[in-house]
Length: 100
Image 1 (cartoon, one colour):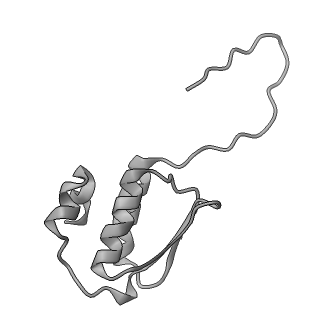
Image 2 (cartoon, rainbow, N blue to C red; image 1 turned 90 degrees about the vertical axis):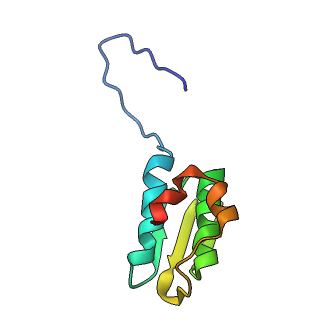
């Protein structure tokens, strides 16, 4: 991560895009199982743990769509047909505990 050193008495102005946080995204993805309608998450980090979480949601029966360029994920849990996660999926990531 870079640092910014500001010198002078001038105001700082501008915009900066902040990336989504894995530690925020994983619990939110698991909570999508409780929603009664489609959930859309913006600015979702596209990392291995998030992708594995999406696979677990699919395994449980959720419809999942990932739009990588927009960093947008859509989850629809109305088609949930299972409450069991395979041992293989659980072993791939420690945060699978969130589904308990």
